[in-house]
Image (cartoon, rainbow, N blue to C red):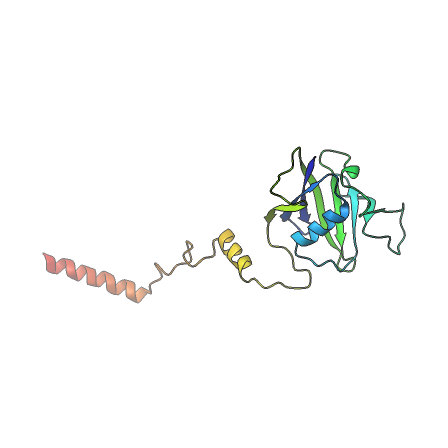
Length: 189
């Protein structure tokens, strides 16, 4: 059974993304739930996918439900539409919009088709995370693992080069040490 690997970029920062693997027979609702989990968002809001092209233009809509808005064509429903049925090209793209008030937008791109399933994974599954997820409801405090991840990624630890206390002596201390060292040399002769 084919497994599809999608890279899900946060629209605001393409260096922040999550890679999700999912079976081609699973539905867009499964992908929707995997994206929310990967980005640490709740599932309280409306959501929709749009089939897209290389310019990220929005095409046919694949919606969580039929919303009270004008549609150019009736939307497909996430729970009825398998992901494999909407793959039209090798690097198929989708635009995912969550919470229509906040308009969280993610760019979803097919980056790999894997022929065999990994028996150790439960599909869908997040297989790679880059960058810190945006906070759904305001600022997110950097505590625990996230702070440690930032310290490691940006080398912000206490012993990091350029941040130590070594070589930060005052001019007075430096001058005294040089005089003292010179005085010792004179008595040694």
